[in-house]
Image 1 (spheres, rainbow, N blue to C red):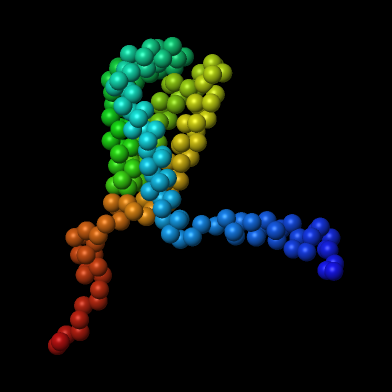
Image 2: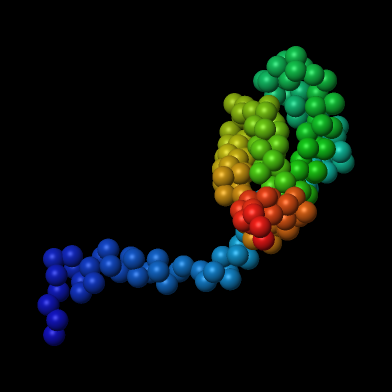
Length: 179
């Protein structure tokens, strides 16, 4: 029988945890599928929520009017126009994020639009907004991750373009003279 070490096991706790992590590591194929899935799942809340800015416009305006931030929102602009503009940004940037087109720009547009919406609607003394507030904080984290990592696999940003072919040609050394 093998002697147990001071760590409480043959492999030790650290070794066992590393083994579990190693077994949970996805294959490269699975990892590649996660990129478009992550973009799609992150974008859905913006596409659906953005459409809600149009379909539930009156209700959302009433919610904004109840916010302690309503005077600040009013100083920025007409709340109805701001609601339309944020809806447009959410839908368009959500769609482009989903397909991986201008992915980093889409993530930053969504981030920049979500921050003031989160402050105006969810940063309120009402405890029922704690869940939605932290949901938005998590979404902001996902957008930062997408911005930092880029589009990943299966994105339109990765398709070859005439410009990339031209850059390849320009980056190759010129042939020696006389050839």
